[in-house]
Image (tube, rainbow, N blue to C red; front, side, top):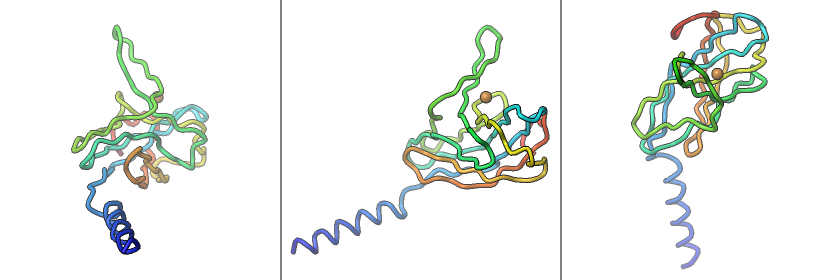
Length: 146
Ligand SMILES: [Cu+2]
């Protein structure tokens, strides 16, 4: 009797993990290559929230040594950016990491990467499964998605 109860509870738990929940999605990832090799690159992507509030906690990019999430702000007409721990992705909202806004900063990106190519990016969340996608590589100075 006890065993069968556990089996049912376990099955319910698995069902909750597997489907049902509407996880965030991501599209249009791209990376702007640095004008000067060795300078940081920036990564952008559009994220659509799922059915619950989550936070984007990091981007994993094997081609970069270090990736930081940055918030851009403007005070007294001066634009500045600073690292943040996470970026909110509210349920049902579209959150765009884009030039002039929040973005990911990539340090020591593999210099062999060239505009026109792609590289693998994994978005990590606090309460949603990771999203893996290819980011298009854009030439330095590119203003919008390639
Ligand atoms: Cu930055």
